[in-house]
Image (cartoon, rainbow, N blue to C red; front, side, top):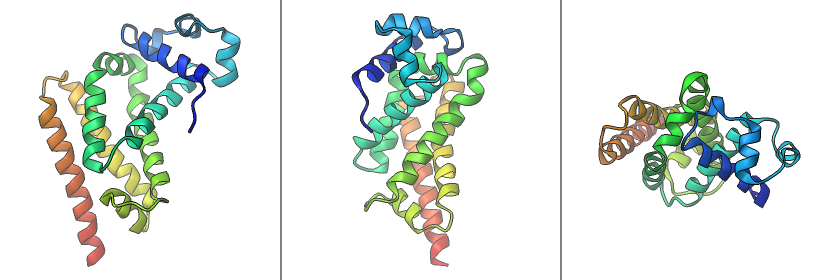
Length: 186
């Protein structure tokens, strides 16, 4: 998906503002001021700030997926991304935004997995999605495990080492994929 310069500027503005402010308190005017763009430009590309957030999360996750060589690499990159943007995730997960942030991330990651299953891949998770009777459910289960890791880590105030989180997430995803492979052989 190609992102225009204007969309990129709005997305960067949102990410910059989320370093210091909760999402619920941000206004479209603040986002426009940070992006140095007009409100009319904002509404040309987005319905509201929630639409901007959804597109921004999608762009960021897609970028990480595109630059990953394997599921282990993707897990590592996603966790490093969360680690590098802790304040953004804290501000996104504050107040009422908390209820939808992780669900939205899970939905986006699931959709990316489902899109990737149409491609030839050596990735064991993508291969599982290609072989299962219910790829949508499996995509949600797998993305839920990964997003659940992020949620848990944030609940622990990121006090658990990044290495431990990466290793645990990798082992969990491997267990889920191995378990599914064993089930298919029976």
